[in-house]
Image 1: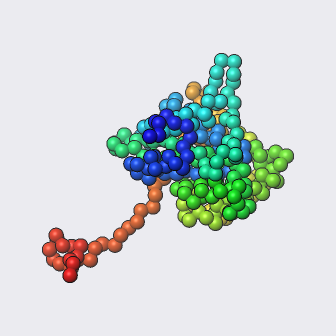
Image 2: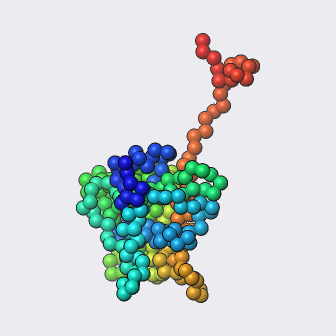
Image 3: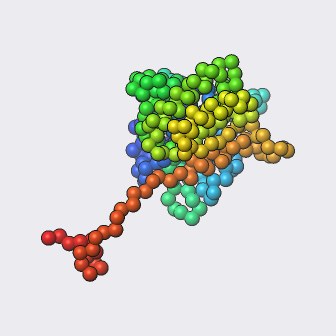
Length: 275
């Protein structure tokens, strides 16, 4: 049996997590060092401090608490050690992404809803963006095939640095690849490190790359640094709660069946009779 406080989950654990209902899988895609793991760690810290207002939903447990702690531990203040960014997610560990589990329960409902957030190396997505059948990108392919929704991470720091051209090209390739396989699933363009300024022309180019192929995408800007005026205590960062709430508010499309054809005036037989 999978322990309640295990590390990040793998494919072998999905059957256990799916025991009560199919979980929502949120695919977080982006380049190396774009801030994907930092985003996950920030969410965990906000939930732990009771700062994430999720519209009446409350934390109802996790099968991957050790995994959450691993990505968030470096971001905590410790005596003599200021917070740091989480370590880079290794591209050498397996062919499927690690997944962090979160269960949330509505105040007026008894059954919790399960979410799985993927934590995959950026190198996988770069390989997959160039070649959908690349063996080095097979983990990114899994995310593309199985996610219910996507967060496309755009790193403002990389898009304003010395390698901005390469960062732009990689993100444009990734957007085109994902757009070709989206199948009408929800997607959000997420600008990380929102405190970093980028050229308006760069911002326009990235938006065009995303919205040309995914016109229904939603847009968010996030940062672990609080950019609001004044000195709020404690800090919630910028845009983090809004993005998490968007992710957990998602609903799968439902299938509407046509009404049954009545073959009798007797209401007990409105679904027809065998002949």
